[in-house]
Amino acid sequence: MKEKLQAMRDALERELDAVRASEDVEALRVKYLGKKGELTGLLRSMGSVPAEERPAMGKLVNELREHIEGVIGAKKELMRAAGMQLKLEKERLDVTAPAVVRPIGGRHPIAAVTKELEDIFIGMGFDIVDGPEVEYDYYNFEALNTPPGHPARDAQDTFYVNDKVLLRSQTSTVQIRTMEKTKPPIRVVSPGRVYRSDAVDATHSPMFHQMEGLVVDKGITMGDLKGTLELFAKTLFGEETKLRFRPHHFPFTEPSAEVDVSCFVCGGKGCSVCKKEGWIEILGAGMVHPNVLRGCGIDPEVYSGFAFGLGIERIVMKKYGISDMRLLYENDIRFLRQFG
Image (spheres, helix red, strand yellow):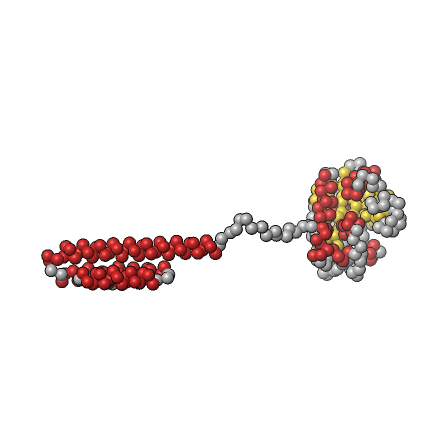
C-alpha cells in the first residue's frame, strides 16, 4: 500500500509539471480525488488492510489527500497569476505615450448661420416655429393671397405630390399656420428647407433654406419693420451697416419692399462682392396684407403686422465669400473643413 501511495505521489508530480492549461489541472484533481479517482479507490480498498495497520495507512492516505489538494491548489493559483500577468502584458497601457487626437467635426456653414440668425431673433424676443415641408396648396399659395391662376405662382413653381399637396416653396406657410392657432401678439421666425423647380447652377438649387419672420399686434407699422431689420443687419454684419428699402410687390404684403444692406466688404464704396453697386440684396419684406390677416381669423381693422423672408444660402455665401452654391451641398470635406 505504501508503495502505491508513493508511486501516486510521484506520478502526480510528473503530471503537474507537464500541464499547461488550468483545465488540465482540474482534470488531475478529478483523476486523483474524484468519486472514481485513484486515491478514492485506495480508500475503498482499506478493508483489505490488516486491522492493526489501518490507522497508520489511514494517516498516510489522508496526508496524501492533503498533499494532492495542496499542490493542485497551488498549481491553479500559479496558473491564474500567470494568466493574469499575460493578460496585463497584452493589455498594457502606456500612459506616457502621446494621445491619439480624434478629429472634431463642426457645424455645416448653413447650420452655423441658421443658428446665428436664430440667436439674433431670440435675443429680440422672437420664438422659433416649424412646420411641414410637405404642404397643402392652400397654405403655400391661397392663404398667402395667391389664388389659382395668379402670375406669382409661376415664379415659385414647385414639386407637386398631387393637385392639393406639394413641397412648400416658402416657409411663409408656417406664418399662416401660426396665425390660425395663435392669437396676437405674435412674434415668430421660421427657418427651414423649401423647394422650387429650379435648374441647378451657381446661384440656384431645387432645394434651399429660408427664414421667414412675422410680427402681428396692435399698432404695428412700417417703422417697426425697418427698426427690426436694422437691428438684425447691424448685429449680423456690423454696426456700420446701412439698410435700403426698394419698392416691390409680394401678393401677401402691402406695401412691400426689397431690402438691401450696404456691402460689408467695401462699406458701400463698390467692389466685386456687391458688383460695384455698394449694396447687397438680402431679403424681401412688407406689411402683412389685410386679406392674409382676415383669412386667418385676425381682424385687420384691429391688428396689423409685418413679415420678412431671407434666403439662408445667400447670407452664407455673402458671409463667407462663396461664389457657387453647389459647394454647400457636395459634402467635400476639403471645403467643409474651412468652417470647422
